[in-house]
Length: 251
Image (cartoon, rainbow, N blue to C red; front, side):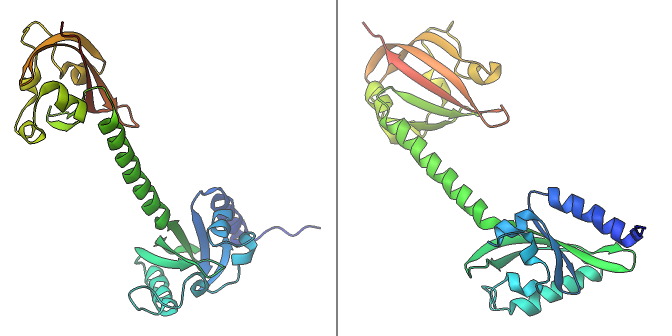
């Protein structure tokens, strides 16, 4: 006859079911030792599976000392003790993989009472990955800037206050403006001599492309241009900037 699981075992089963579905690395710690971990934790620390993290002292997951000189074992056990006393924590930490390499992480921990047992769910997020993503975003911004500057079509980027954010060499050549002069100019200086023409800001207000023929009085002379203004949006679909492209059709 099968023995009914105890309330503690049932609750731990429920905890494990949640733990296994979490995308971030999580360890369950009791009395300073890891009693459970999810697959993400196994991957993060470079072991074959979550089973290899079970039974290890929490200090195993860190180098002997943190970058500020603190002994990792002493510091992490102090944080766990704080959590047990009702003071959950979130802090930057340097972790160590099974192969000895280290990585920067954000640690979050808090105590959870299961009947008479106190366990500490410890969430570990690899912040070095976020740093790499940030560096990647900066590199992408740099590449985008290179695309703008290398484009043979005259280009302008405006922010939502209609302040000039960037122009390329082709725009300077077409208009005859010096880049320094443009710093003190507003969008109104680039509106058409034909007052019936639509405004650059209409692209932001309407959230759609504005295409028209305009006549501009420029240092290089009066020019008839096709002006194409289109909103640039973020990942949520919000307009963040306006890109204006010109084509000179002056007779």
